[in-house]
Length: 283
Image (tube, rainbow, N blue to C red):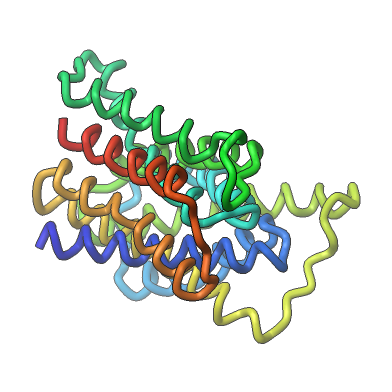
């Protein structure tokens, strides 16, 4: 069941990332985040009411609040990076989020083994090769690389925080709901300020875009849920490795729907980032 839930996580996250990045190419990324997360919050609120998850309220929910504060920053940075593209480079670099749990372990007294040190080295080389401005081929802006690394940190922090926010299935529903409400409040405030300053156009979402926005928000929530279930039912390392395959889904979707093409050196860099991620998770 761990493998099944983790593979479902990679599929859901990969498709959500592709959809969010695609929407951000024609709609401000901040608007995509706020609207998609608002839809997800409404659905989760209904689930919490039906399941009676309110009874699971505890001080642990502060971890969900913290995840909700960090999450919009990561999603906004990631969607902007995906909009700049190419997705086949941006998405694998975001998988470096696994480095955050490793850093947390260091703070708590753990020491990485040789495999993890090798993973860090391989991942850094991957970042350089995939985003180096001196390489020709599919253009990769330095801004896209920096945004992706910010997103990776945000995603890793959310994974670490949400794992501490609940220990039961109904508690997970409540934690995800609290996280999404915080996402909406944080992102909505930022969107309001941006509109008032004139840096972002007033949101004008076409009805035809709502299904896509709903899919992005709900797929992201479902992925968080399946990852938590995978980690609860088996080794976290196995869950993390299989869930980290999500960039492959995004890259394949970009190749299939957008016909993105990468030169060999860029593909190698993206691949090394994934290899580094796997080494970090399994070391």
